[in-house]
Length: 153
Image 1 (cartoon, rainbow, N blue to C red):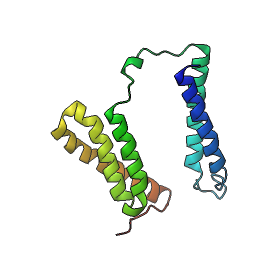
Image 2 (spheres, helix red, strand yellow):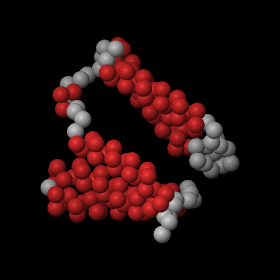
Image 3 (cartoon, rainbow, N blue to C red):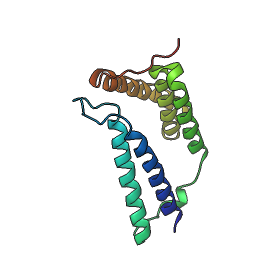
Image 4 (cartoon, rainbow, N blue to C red):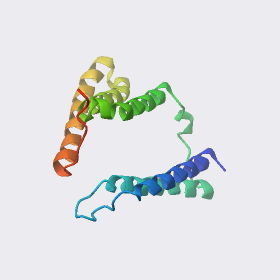
């Protein structure tokens, strides 16, 4: 059993646990609206399908691992994990706008600074984070009429 197959099994176990939680929410479109369980159900389906695909390829021996020497656990990986944890923690107290602006800026800068250099990456990251925050707000608030936290201040 390869590391990739074990990881796919781990993801499938987490997916089943997440599915159990998602099934406790009201069914999507039961009242004509997407409802709170639509995105968790889409995520469960997508994640499960991807993990099953990886698992089948690993067990059949048909998976291609040409780029594995570049797949190492870098400082950028740690930074992305820290940014994601910070976003989850800050979402309620800071509100959607500030938490999303900071998170999207941080992620964009991590990827753009290598490609563009530190100064251009800052400008590009500002534009990217403003775009993501604005489109997200329009998507959730305007299209789905969902509540997004505005923060404690």
